[in-house]
Length: 569
Image (cartoon, rainbow, N blue to C red; front, side, top):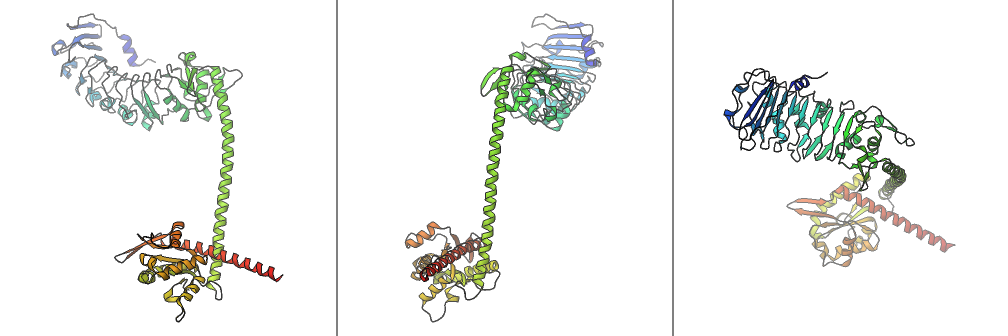
């Protein structure tokens, strides 16, 4: 059934008027009114015949300001309220009251206006029944100006043509702003060809506006992005013009966004080579597709779409001249070319499966090995801690302490008041005991004994030595001797060093010790003690090094026993 718009078009008799640029010529023919070379307010009558249905006005493009400001007011249209079709060519700007009084207008064209940049917001509010809007060839008219003018009021619009208007870089053309400004469910024809910069963005409003579109023209456009675009599977889209635009951007969305999903895949019989079993889906519903001057991407990801281009039973403009780009090489899109791509993709798929399977197996083996290693290490740590507890907490054993705390007498206030309680607290919690596990000269040395003998005893009964290294420590002969004796007895060392301590002038043993091991650093300023890392981390390190000392001790005892047994034999 033909629409009201089509019936009116059929009634119109177009009149071509030949006139000079300097003279205004207006002609009435039945229901049409055509006026050429309007350059002054006096050139246009204040009223028109009541039977006029179509008005076409040509500005004088040879003069600056084709239509004077304020030329068209509501008085102009007061006695032709039935006007259905209005065409302007050569308008400078469109004021808000431009269309007041034309509430029955269904076709409006404001085209070929080289100086048109301004359309006041809400100008189309006066034409709620508008079904067709053409703003073609206005090369300086920006898209956001059109959005403001539409403002969501043309809910009956069916035909929209914006050929060659100016897109804005990084401005979403078919995005939320544009589709909300359009706000119609009846759009069937959309032509935005020649727009140099187009971004297409998928939002719910896009689906709502585009659900009934049958004709879409994006030819000669720079389609920079089509992120997330997908038309409904039951779309009415039939004719698509993508000539000389980078069509792959949009066509790949059909491929990638489930429009050619598994249940809409096309069957293909390679032996017949021309048979394509078309099933329900968006692309098989096309009646015409124009992708001329668009080298299509022929790769494994778009193979199904290329197959459809070759064999689908629709009108694809000059199908035999289409070209295909595969691995940077451009060639005609034909059966031979497709079979080559298909064979390469099949090989790549098989190779990918093999490599993927091998990689998956290797990753699984490595992950399993790491898991086993971590579990074994955790089990060993638990076993070592259990053994240490049994060794330390029972009397008459070789080791009575976990840590021998070595420090200089000048640092005793920090060592005795801060470091010793913190270490004891942490170790007692780990070993679940109230026994002191840190040996110090102040609390553990036996009175009356030689200092050197007590140092040796304390080191011998401790698994780890923890020196509190400060500038005073490095100048103390006894402190340095404690460190050297501990290293000579193969004890592990966990260093607590004061920040900014210079070790350049100390003995080589200390230099090598600090160079080869990670250390904890501390500072004490204005009664505030800060240590890094935390005490819990330091205690974990002490437990691990103590376990290493204990294992070495047991290994050494075992070797000694074996040697004694050999001597006895």
